[in-house]
Amino acid sequence: MTLKIALQLVYARARGFAAHSATKAGLISLTRTSALDLAVDGIRAVSLSPGAVMASRLIRRAGSEKEAQAQHAPRHPIGRIGRIGPTAKIAETALFLVSDGAGFIPGSDLPADGGYALKQTWALPDCPALPECCRGGPFARQ
Image (cartoon, rainbow, N blue to C red; front, side, top):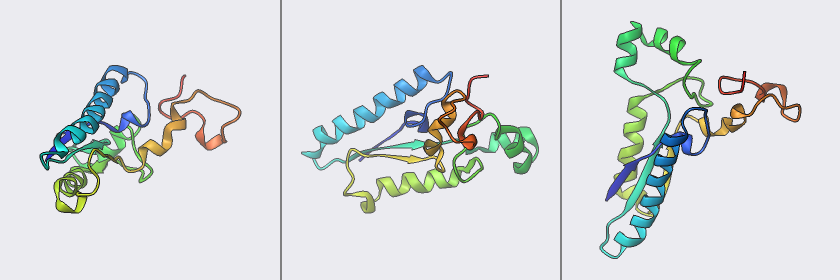
């Protein structure tokens, strides 16, 4: 079993992450190729693309989780759940991927981003064709 850690920005773009996103996309491609190569030996390869997480260092710097959410929410990719996710959710997802329960998804990448990839339109500049709710946002051109 191999588990590679990629990034949710492989699915939804944000300015300033081109090199990092391209590198992580390469890991996903490596995962798929490895799955083919290693399957003959009974080894499964998968990858995980986590989103922003509420790491303990963010909480320590901010003083509380509530304050950390307030400080980082405007600057970090946040999914449809409306908050930065707990690290435990990423760990649970990783444990699932390496378990027998995920035995039928070799070569797959699983985004664990709270639905952030659904917000791809946020990376677009103000566009009259987009609904008002999708214009602008933290990653739109200023």
